Image (cartoon, rainbow, N blue to C red):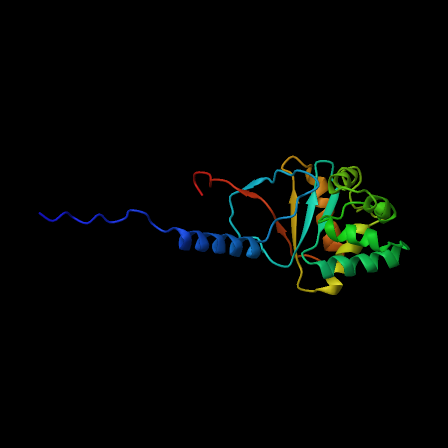
Length: 201
């Protein structure tokens, strides 16, 4: 009587491993990571769902004390706006400070304190220093408006979003919105968290 021939149950997983590594590499290279914010902000809830623009967006961050921080979408806008602001306010930055500025995703300090902030060795140290100041946005020294205008002069298609904490007093958010209106930047998105629609709507 002939014996049945045994077949090997070993499966070669080399090809599957190659495909997995290729997919992982693809996703890592094409993903866009959100910059770490210098302050933690819990956005308020909203029932209206409108998609916030994802590309070419200038982010305005407002903390609980009303301090304002800015994030620009591209390096050329960040550095171009920095050059214009440095010229306007008579600030000179060396190459090391400019490299540090490229690595710091948010702007959140008065221009006269910017060189000192950029001399701090770690991003965490810079974030801690920014938490004390924010960009001046008052009528006497409105550097916030100047940053926006200089960035928009480099790219007129820049979109604007505002993100404030849900417990930030409304007058502090209104102050930022009024600053935008004064410089004729009337189109912007408010970032909120989606919640369920109340009954009856």
